[in-house]
Length: 256
Image 1: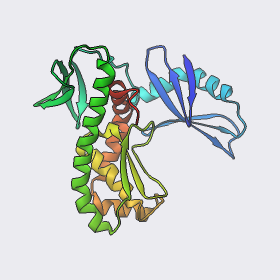
Image 2: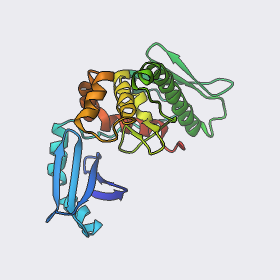
Image 3: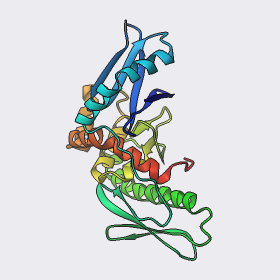
């Protein structure tokens, strides 16, 4: 099993072909390496000054236990079939299982039908895959913007505040963020989730315009905008890893 460090995350490739993503964090009071698993995912904490190779070795030595625990919580991402030109495949879209099919046409486009999407790609197919990925990314973003604009029309008057801009892109670990300039970022993978999950993340980030922390009054504010936020947060915790993996196979290498 191989481990690879990436930013604040470590990716552990298992013998079964799965990939485990572990949040890594130095802790000033830690005396030893510690591995924990919760519905939010896996986390390894370690004393300041610990060499990355020690962290990797520690995770590899606990890989079987980690895989078992994550599998119990449905957080293991099983290998997904690669996106192949001309080969239909199933994928999640707005929380439902959809079919992605292919067709030939005079110009590249995405067509919706009851039950899925069709990628129309002209010949020759020399760059069909990157073109298809770009089409899907644009389609997902457009759908999210339509949803978000509709919900923002109701939420902004309630809050009395509005973000300065909205950016939608693939995000490695987060579902959304609000930066110091009041710009909201949303993960493109939310296009694959049920609309209610996207709505929860939007409400969450909008509430940070008033409360920058996750103090009790923040969650009280979220509840005023989106009363069933706990249900959607829990859905994302259980299904989030798979959702992000699905987006990666569909739009990998598309510049954000």
